[in-house]
Length: 73
Length: 313
Image 1 (cartoon, rainbow over the protein chains, first blue to last red):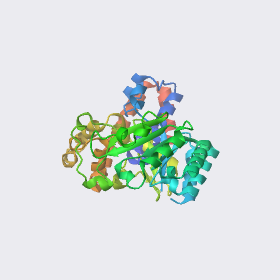
Image 2: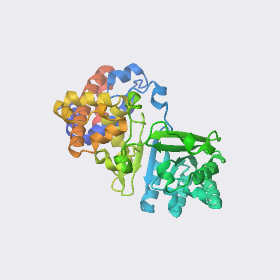
Image 3: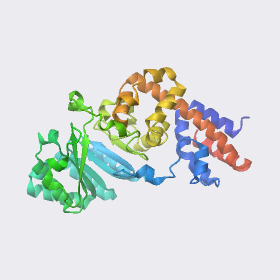
Image 4: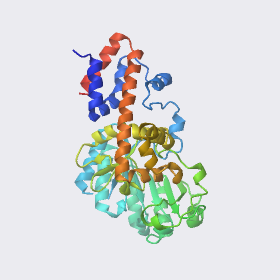
């Protein structure tokens, strides 16, 4: 019987939807396992372009700061 | 856009905790006054703030303009953006813009007047001098992008190309833009409708939450937002050198938006770029699994992978 990791890897390779779910959920699950997901070295180690630790760099110059839905006529 | 569709989008956005505001752009959103009032009333019900991008034509109507400003203030307007430059002045006078701006600014709503000129150095300071140093009014000069009517204009970008922007204007999160037909884009670039390869879904055919989930999970957008186009091209060069050789290059365009447009307006190139980033994402996820395995002890790692199997099934 394959391990959970093997099953997960297979799903992730096969399914774009699984990859979307992974990307959107894995940090919360890691946090649930006691990992400090705000630690810059942890984020760097995990890859996936996660680093947001230098806040000013990301928001400097932005007029608005988060999601906006625009309804165009 | 059908009103029911727009109201449905507002309800969906309000039900998610990730939307900070709604933006109305055009065309001219205030022109469809009954629809606009219905949508802003719905936003007020949800206590969801909003912004408006307008030509300011309604400033010509002194009483109506003041009443509209009162309504917007009461329903959650948090910023007014008014386009004002020689192109817009063919249809809306700077005097109307000035009155519309003052209607909002006097009510302590920040007003951004955006002038898009075809010559570097042209400025709103000269175009609407009566709005210089008005409290709550901010004048922003831009150089026109090669889109719409400006496609055929002779614009000299050479003096601004040395410090050109390498990343998306929004480094974190997204401006999710829904057009009248439901086609949904990840940003509010002026190139949107001419950049079919950027379409991320149709908000009339699937829930907004799914579209947002795909967008948040995209390494393509994460790379061009956080690292920028140099890294975007480097990844493509590594994974598909032939595609890299065929692509329009960052060096040939004045900034990130025009480069993005040049790449994603080409159906074949866009499809291959998306494929590269799908492959890249899969490879990066696999590497992250190794890291997670070493980050957690055996018991926690097993629990993580079991929960993830459920999440990702």
